[in-house]
Amino acid sequence: SIQTITSLNLECNKIQAEGIRYLAEMLQNNTTLTTFDLGWNNVRDDGAQYLANALQNNTVR
Image (cartoon, rainbow, N blue to C red; front, side, top):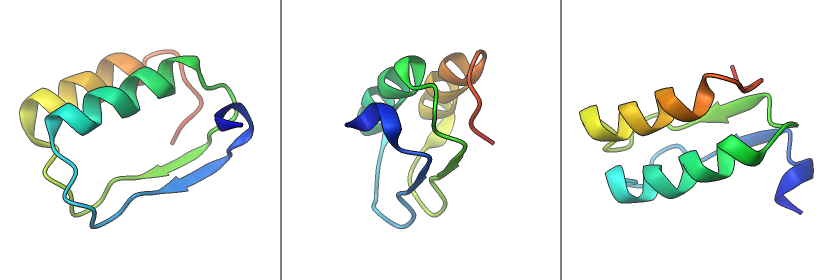
């Protein structure tokens, strides 16, 4: 189950804003993820905003 994942590495997957939006929705409901790597993706400004909103009350570093 996605609820028990503690680490997620999605580095170098060409993820763009729409994909980031879905990941951000997942992050809002996850309480166990502590490490999340999105390096070398196409996050951009709108994707970064989705992530910032999702991570306000989360344990991800």
